[in-house]
Length: 170
Image (tube, rainbow, N blue to C red):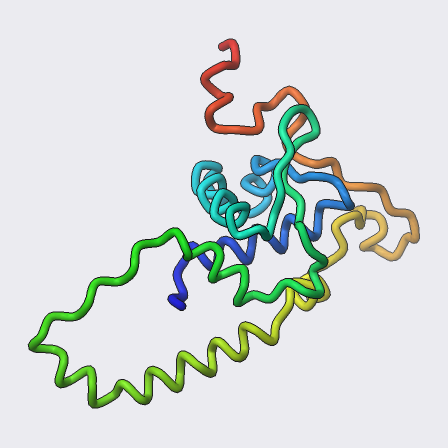
């Protein structure tokens, strides 16, 4: 498994999705706005996550993506593997570097194994436990006990796909 920015963004996006879903689908533009990730990049990542069966999508008003399994059972390693499955395999090294690579192959293999063990031990629920509450108002952060739900971005009149942008009247 390779660790890339795409994998990191997938973990961030699914953490946001789980944090803000409340049992309802979450639109990608909302994740894009909160996490500053381009919508087209998110569409590509979520396509791979959907093919892997980690998320399901629904169309139409109120549509978006939702997790297909509980956060307690979804590991960071599964998310990264699903997001990076669509990436092409790395090209093999040139022959003149083969001798130098073999000298440290055991080191990198051991390192990769330890990283994989760690990523398999961290679940999406673990990441959610580290996040602040999504429905905490400014007043409650100051000590008041009242909370109000945070309005999901974007508003209903905003298209939920890059492709729908071309259909909106200017």
